[in-house]
Amino acid sequence: RVQVVESGGGLVQAGGSLRLSCTTSGLSFAAYGMAWFRQAPGKEREGVSCITWSGVTYYAHSMEGRATVSRDNDKNTLYLQMASLKPEDTAMYYCAALRGYAGCPSSWSDATDDNYWGQGTQVTVSS
Image 1 (spheres, one colour):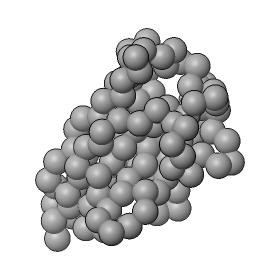
Image 2: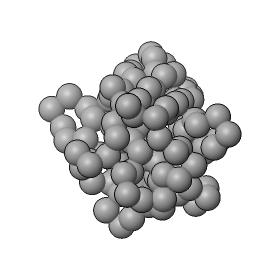
Image 3: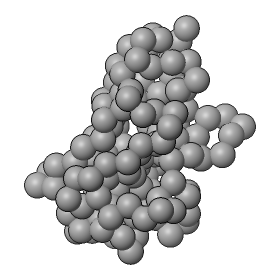
């Protein structure tokens, strides 16, 4: 059974930093493209960042320059380091294993049900 578990969310002041983590089990982590998404109340889930099995990274415009995605294939863990956080970054952050992809397809930011999803970790940025 595949499990995806996010951690590291919390309350932070505007301008602050957070590092999110995502661990997986039940799948060959190193063979998957991995992505971070977020969903704010009343809004659709949106892609934040994607990383291929080999470490090539992609970012949504909203987070470019403020986020760094990385992975440790030996630990089956994905990370998202976020800095210069803004109140509009407040959302539930989700980790996803892109089923069928070792890379980041052009559609990586689509929040498809085909992905393996975690339950999310809440990030709240106060002004």
